[in-house]
Length: 423
Image 1 (cartoon, rainbow, N blue to C red):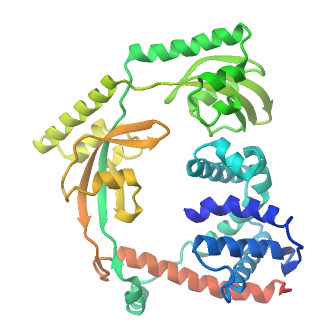
Image 2: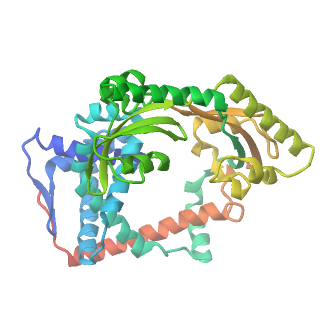
Image 3: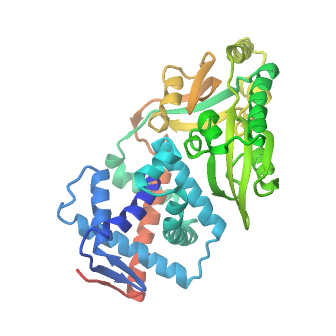
């Protein structure tokens, strides 16, 4: 995940670093060149991430070799006519921007850090993201079905068991989720606030001013509610249905989504994209809603403990997490060091077979819910054993086999595609 978060830093940083040094060509691969500025930036970034001295002997050569390998794969992807659609590029860009917003807290903070708008970040990064997707597709096509045999797993374990060392503690986690819903009466108050803003706008009030003053969307309020150009699939379906149906300059009614009521104005349509702005009146839960959620989950917990049904039975019937309820509430098997702090706090003191009391878990930006958490199985930290940890060891062996094949493939590409180091 950290690598993905750093991609745009890498792209944009290289661009600006190149302007600050006397540049020269470090390497050529097919029709692509590697500038010294790019090599220096990637070396410094790699060193910073791992707390290394960027002048460590051999480090720059290692980074240059990685860049050359990547460009060799890109050249082969072009020869193989690997195609990447505009939608795929847009989805990856949107995903990376979302990671940035999560990391830095808001759209405005991202723009401040990089000194440009989100739209410009996407525009500057588009070509490089397309190349990365082409490389990814070719690697998947080449190695997706590469797996280690049982014998190869055994050989891998014998060779690397000392390096594998300790397997971290692992838990099989289930949950039942309850969203503390605001009462109908309270919800009407928030809708009425949105309707009053619409009346003010129709009477001539300035949209940007009202958005800055009243909108509960931290990502757009300071920009006067401006959301920029977007395609379908970015926002809630209810929001998009209303926004895409508007004419340029038209105001919506009070549009309800899972987070609240939106007042939307369409500014411009451009092909399959729209430029819109909005004011969000967030539906804030009241204390009664919290109490209702806690009481409901407490009753569910008592019923399970009284053996009137299994945890999975109740999750399928009552959980409001649509992604897990069909699977009996199973979140999955996780090592403790993979869990975020909120979930780690929820499971850390539970023993195998135990069910937590109703627990509030915060998701950030004021969003939260209540959960019953159940640990179906808990495997303590232990030294790696072939049979006990076969799935994990096989996964490592699969990766090792893919890397071996990849190394051999790169050697073949170096023999057939022109490349040259010029340092």
